[in-house]
Length: 110
Image (cartoon, rainbow, N blue to C red; front, side, top):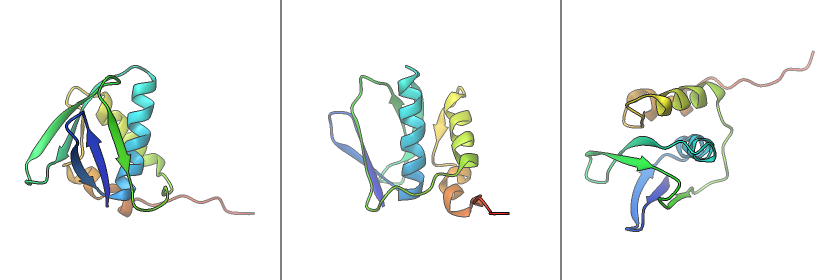
C-alpha cells in the first residue's frame, strides 16, 4: 500500500500502489496545466474525505514498490472524472478495483 500525504498537517491516506501510480499521473498532469480539482478518498476512519487539489497545497506520494505499468483506459476514466464538477472520487467501485481488473494491452510481434 502507498500513502498520499496532503497539506501541511501530514494527513496520510492509504491507497493501493497501482491506483496511486495512476493517481500520481493524473494529479501531475492536472497541476502542470494549472487545473485544480476535488479528490475524494477514503479516510482511516472509513469515512470519505474530499480534498481540494491545487498547486499551492503540498502533496506527497509514497509507494512501497516500483512504478507499475499504467493502464490507458483507467487514466482516461480518472482524467474524465477529475475534469467533471464532482471531481475524482476514489471511493467509487470504478476506481477502487480498476487497475487490477483492467486488461493490459501489450505489443505483439507479427
